[in-house]
Amino acid sequence: MDRNIIHMDLDAFFVSVECKLNPKLKGKPLIVGGHGRRGVVAACSYEARHFGVHSAMPMYLAMQLCPDATVISGDMEAYSQHSHLVTAIIADNAPLYEKSSIDEFYIDASGMDKFFGAFKWSLELQQKIVKETGLPISMAMSANKTVSKIATKEFKPRAHHRIAPGEEQPFLDPLPVDRIPMLGKQTALFLKDMGVRKVKTLREMPLKLLIGAFGKNGISLWNKAQGIDNTPVVPYSEQKSISTECTFEEDSIDIKRMKTILTAMVEKIAFKLREEKKLTSCITVKIRYANFDTETKQIHIPYTSADSVILKTVMALFDKLYNRRMLIRLIGVRFSNLVHGNHQIDLFQDTTESINLYDRIDYIKHRFGTDKLMRASTLNIDKRVKMNMNAFKG
Image 1 (cartoon, rainbow, N blue to C red):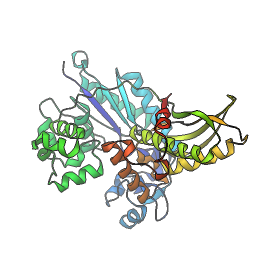
Image 2 (image 1 turned 60 degrees about the vertical axis):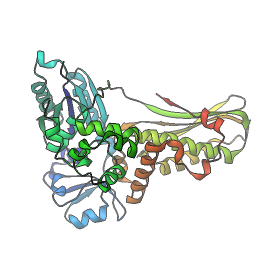
Image 3 (image 1 turned 90 degrees about the horizontal axis):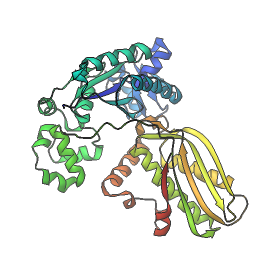
Image 4 (image 1 turned 120 degrees about the vertical axis):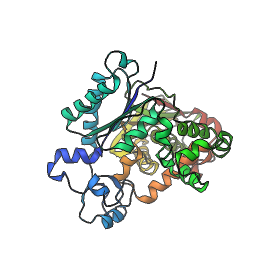
C-alpha cells in the first residue's frame, strides 16, 4: 500500500492570528517580536518579507529594511488558543495525526485512496480549517514526512500540492540544501564550506563521507536528500509536564551543592524542551526534608525554554522554599503548562546573542552528547548524583 503523508502548516501563524483579531492590520507590513534595538523578529507578514524581513532577524535591522512596519509584542495565549482550534478540527476528521509544533501537523492518510481519494480529502480538510478558524493554512502530500514538509514550505502561502511517487528526486534536486528539515545552521554552513549547496549534490555524495563528517546524522541527511523517510506519523497526545528530581544518598544541608545540582537539572530538562520543540510557562521546585515532609513552590512566567531565564526562576523559588534549615533528602524541578513550538516562539524576549548561543549549545549537545558541554559549576557533580537525576514526563 502506498503511503500518503500530509503536512499542514499554518501560514505566518502569529501574524494571521493578529490580523484576525484586528482586521485593520491585513495587507500591511507587520512584525511580531521584541521591541528595542536588541529585540528579535518572531514572525512577520508576507508584506514585510517583501522588504527582506524574516524571522530571527534583529529588530533594528528589520526596521531599517521596513521602517513603516507595525511592530506587535505578541500574545502567546491567543496563539495557543487558535492552535487548539485547528488541532480540534484535525482530530475530529483525520484517521491518524501528529502535532509537531504549535502550527504544524502531519496526517497519515494511507489507504484512503481506495475509499475517498487522499488528496481530495486533504483539500476538503484544508478548506474546512480556513472556513472554521479564519486562518490560512498550507498543505502538501507525498509518500513521507520530509518531502511533504519541504513541499509545503516551497509552495506557501495557501499551498495545496502533491509530490507523486517517483517525483521526489526531480522535486528535491534543484533546491538549496538548507531546505532539508532539521538541518541546523551549523550543519548547513559546514555543508556549504564543503561545496554542497544543492540537494542534488548532497544526494550524489558517498554515504561514507557523510558519516565521517556528521556521524549517524550523516545517514539521515543522505536519506532525506534521496527523498527517503520511513518515519511514522506518531499519534498525538498532549504532554503536560517534564520534571527531574534527585534523591541524595545521604541527607544534606549543603546549599551550595544543592544549587549546583539544580543548575544541572535545569540544563538537562531545558535542553529536552528545545529538542521536543516545547516551551514552558510554569516552573515548580520541590524539596523533601529528612523527615519526609515535602514542600513545593511554583510560579508562572512568560513562555520560554531558555536556561538563563528558567535558572533565575528556579533559584529564587528554592530560596523562598528552603526556610526550615533541616536536612534535605530530595530536590526536584518541574516544567508544566507546555505548548508546542520552536525556540522561535521565545524570540519575544530573546536577543540575537542569546539565540545564537542556544543554537550553538544545542548543536554541540546533539552531535556529541549532552555531557560534552555544561556550565563549569556543574562539572564536579558526583556521577552517582547525575545518575539519580531521572527525567519524568507527564
